[in-house]
Length: 303
Image (cartoon, rainbow, N blue to C red; front, top):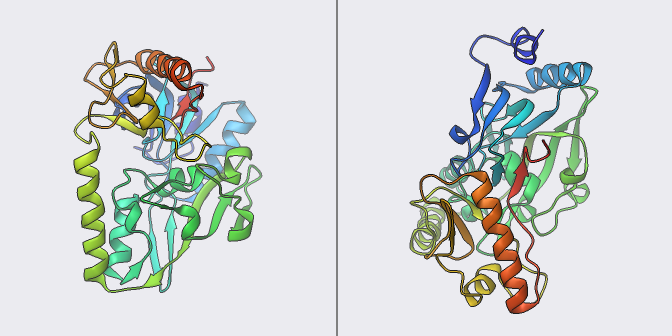
């Protein structure tokens, strides 16, 4: 029995695809096929898939909206599980409990309508809760750490646990989940009461600033590199000072609008992006003595 046949037998029709191009499911619009691509609707289905993968020895990859990833041109072996259908939002002010596949923009909008402040920074981040919590995503001097109260996870043995805020180990673009074998299934946020019109105005202001400063008309994975752990240094500043604005390899380019972004000019491959990132790291090190660390998650390159 093939991987596809095995997983297909466990779920309703339409949830399982074979050899699905990941370029359709990443914000970079780059990536070869997933051997099997699955869109479960709930934690029970995710547990069923995970158990089958463990028994058969299939690699499993968890993906949200694919907004902070670079998928190899060769694709991804095994089973890719996207959480995008696990997107329920429940509001019990001042708390919002949300499925890991909910989009951040939708979550921020729901909070705004409920008169709850604190997620304005997330309204323009084109990702989902699972990736945001995993990476402690942030913008405009705030991040998930500031508002996340607890996280629900699925364990390999099928148990579901809730981690309280003090156990989440958030750091700069980091969380405990990067070092453990769990699947984030939901998160609970604690927000502050506010006026919807003021919250909306702040969201609009932040999103206008994004449109002015970021290359949103091109596919990208957001910031390509993490901020260096050196006071006053930023990846975009270092890249600009190294003379790399507009620097191009194949179809991948350092954005001329914001040098912290690598954009897909239309036909970029993962190999192009990877080569460009390596060139940037080397040139910035030569220019400044600082090694940049990728913020983008690499998937499928272990083949």
